[in-house]
Length: 392
Ligand code: RFL
Ligand code: PHB
Image 1: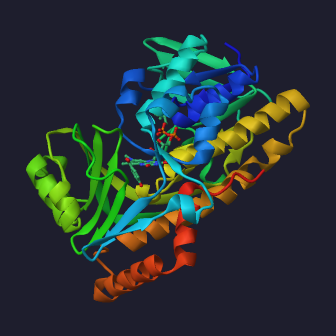
Image 2 (image 1 turned 180 degrees about the vertical axis):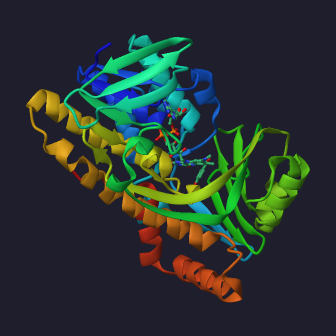
């Protein structure tokens, strides 16, 4: 088989890149190691920046998002038993975020791809990439006993943190930066009305908690947990009790509890691989970088990476210009590092760190007090949370 762009991974970055290329008439095949149902079963991000909304609108998959998604003009910071509203709209000069689950974004992109009859290979085993420095790189994979090969012009590595693409780059050609946090997030999805109409990010002596949602009847909650914790140790009753203890009294009293539909623990990590291009292989999204989820940036970075990459590939085919391809890594990384900084800062501000002691806790409290009392600091938080612009 031959195609122009082989995309590895059918997560949000791979599917959105596929949609951007299809709109420009560029031929692409997506190769995914899991089934479509498995990909849709992963409960992940919930908050979309305006640039992500614009990218989804641009490829014509925004209708359901605008119908069912929840535009949010602010969120609450909760500490010391009180809540403080961050007025995103007012502080950012009119910007807001969209609460719409990654599962739904993925479903909308998958449905559009299927309706357009575009090629996606699911359940591809032993995916490997070859000849990255030649004009015709290749992707190999297996379905059952049959081995397949795709020859292409470019490979987009959209295969997440554990994917094969970044691992195919010789270690000497890649520099990585990493910070692993000494805690995780225990997440619960429940068919209960959200405790508040906006998100609550809570910092308490017992650790961080987040109240989020997917709809008016579906809630998503997280509590900071130990890395040694196992999901089985967290009964629903223990989870709800712990969440209440980390919220202010009003929120704790208003919290509607119910059986969990999903419960999982995610470790927290900051990670960047540089550069994001290696010959004719481009890395995008979680394949190139990870942020801790506190700033709600992972999916949004995946979307803007492929925004840059899609544009670069369109320039290559339509305008015969490789400027975008040459600048892809630098352009994407400039935005990535700013989101890394913000995510690290939000994480450092709101979590209990086992190793920073009472001085660390005092510093966090002072920073929170300063933040909610300073228009400049709140504006900076809002500017980053709604998303920094995609600079061309
Ligand atoms: P994905 O979603 O991991 O998709 C990669 C796809 O590649 C496939 N794959 C392979 N395919 C072929 N061959 C191989 N060898 C392959 N290896 C892997 C995988 O099966 C998969 O389908 O990466 P992508 O597309 O870059 O998207 C990134 C986002 O998923 C991620 O950044 C966000 O979910 C992060 N995130 C959040 N981001 C936000 O913007 N806002 C949020 O509110 C937010 N909350 C979160 C989050 C992530 C979380 N977890 C569990 C990590 C909350 C949590 C709890
Ligand atoms: C979510 O709804 O899953 C969510 C929201 C905000 C975050 C992280 C996760 O910062």
